Length: 149
Image (tube, rainbow, N blue to C red; front, side):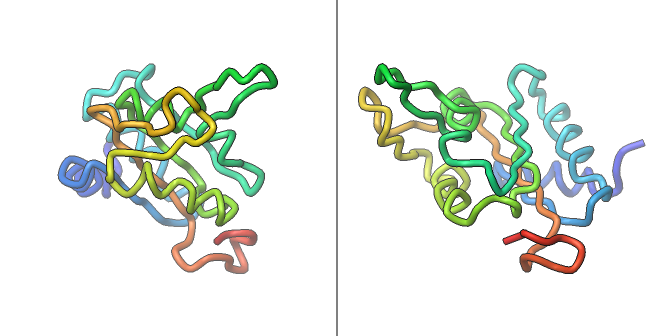
């Protein structure tokens, strides 16, 4: 009952510690991602899933300071530092500036700048962190997928 692309996706994730899936809506991208996380032994509490939209901001993903100056960690930063499995669905719907700000956690450099967090402005990647990204297009907007970048 596994998706036909599951074995390849699992191999890629095991070798590269990250995964990019692309395909049209309903092609099984999310199914593959969930199966890969499970096959790698990530329990549900160690998986963070984010459905990206054009309105999703870097603050929604990384977190921000409140009016009292206390920093509240976002799900991407939490997954990055705690070594979790991160699934960013519909990544091509993100505003380009937000997508670029995500480079540090997606490129494997093991550190990310968090300038709003004064006590720890540099985040360190936790052991076991695996980012997975799903997109509908690789070339941007199409007649079927408007607003994609």
